[in-house]
Length: 299
Image 1 (spheres, rainbow, N blue to C red):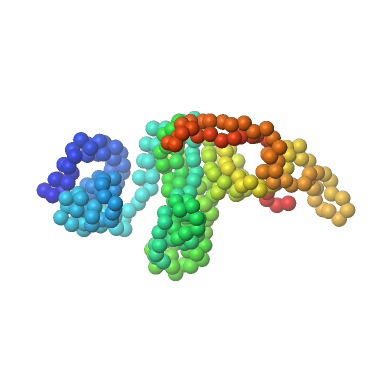
Image 2 (cartoon, rainbow, N blue to C red):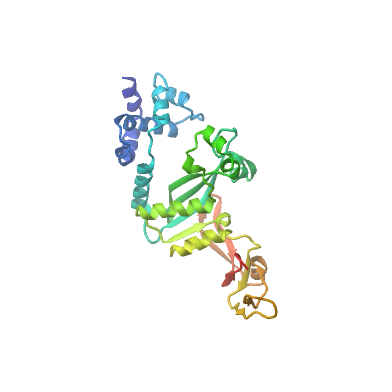
């Protein structure tokens, strides 16, 4: 009776939530999960700052939080079907050749020696180095509609180099292999493509664009992409050529000196571009374009 009362609160809203959750509940398997998932989800979306189980159970009108705890802590979870369904629904909503797959970081300020992945690293939410968890996020977007499709925890070296710490925190052995954020992003991109997600362009900021391996990985997959770079990225002009070695040199060498991207762009004509209206006014910036050859990697 208590469960029925909790489900009947705000019936129109519950009906809409149930309709949205229906395809996800279908792939959850056991009936008990399909029963408690909408309640847990409603608790997360509902009012109140504290999203731990006990206050959520009180707000939902439940006699206790044991069932919610069991729903969350069950060791039998396999989230792969849910991720697959999410990709399917995202593609239905905004997928297509005009869609973009946006790769970025999400940081969660957090402390605790046993909170998986917590380490002192750059935290975008705070704009500085801090103790936090860092996650690689992939979002499918078209026009002004974004739909998150992937979120994977990044394990820094402080964790991957300490197997005992990972064991104590319950990290699966397969997840302790050191992987860069770029490698995680490419792996998730491959998974999403295999599941039929459609997009025309991959976008990423300089945190990913600075990695030659990441950019080459996008090229190897035949993708169209645009990424940010750091201002001191080394480049040649597009007409650079390799000349035969002379003297004791054994390899051909470029006929130009490397330059920083900022210096190359400094002398070009820049023009302002406005692309849409934001919360605080027009979103605009100055742009200049020049074709170059990137000068990173082996000499």
